[in-house]
Length: 259
Ligand code: URA
Image (spheres, rainbow, N blue to C red):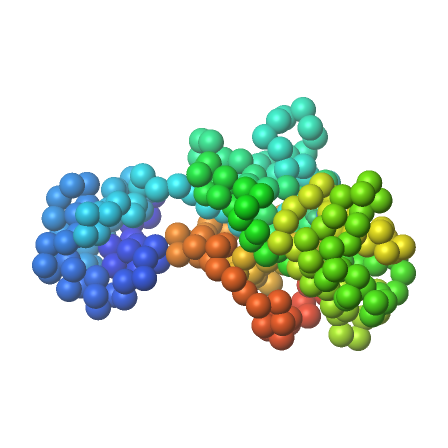
């Protein structure tokens, strides 16, 4: 494994700046493999060295977090008998024991999916009490209707009688067949069932964000990237729906029907 600088390793995983890391090292607050390291430009092995800053382990013993841009036809499961599995898309250099998809996207859905070995974080994320906002973009079979905005805000009832928490929905500019929808819960096939309840149909569904963690445009469909520990905290940070929409570049919307 290629060696990297200690200050780079720490700054990617914490809020410490490189100059602060230099000071902490000089004052004996950084250990690698249990030994105090006084120079922050020391090279370390990021895969195998255990790094401790002010008594907190931030290296080796920590969990792995991977963001996948899920393609169609892969299932979110750890069972080999369910067909093509999202774990097959994790490249060998990121494959470690105990990885599983934290959350579900349907077999025909696309977009942001977290894969991790951190059961505690997955539990925090998926607990019905957590209400992490998730934003999706959908391609609809029939034109978006403005009335959906109020209907989705007012506890829409699904065909089986289940009631949904208030959700935000907005049409995509210059595209009457596309919409963004933000949910704070995750019922089975929820987005598809909500649009079905108002007489529409979802042809394509892609998840664009989990909390404040936004699917980067540079992550092609089927590709994975390892998340830095500080990015993982973004999962639990709120991001205003309208702020998300105003920063949306249109990239995924332009490509949605061709995926
Ligand atoms: N809602 C759906 O209907 N499907 C998904 O994959 C995710 C949310």
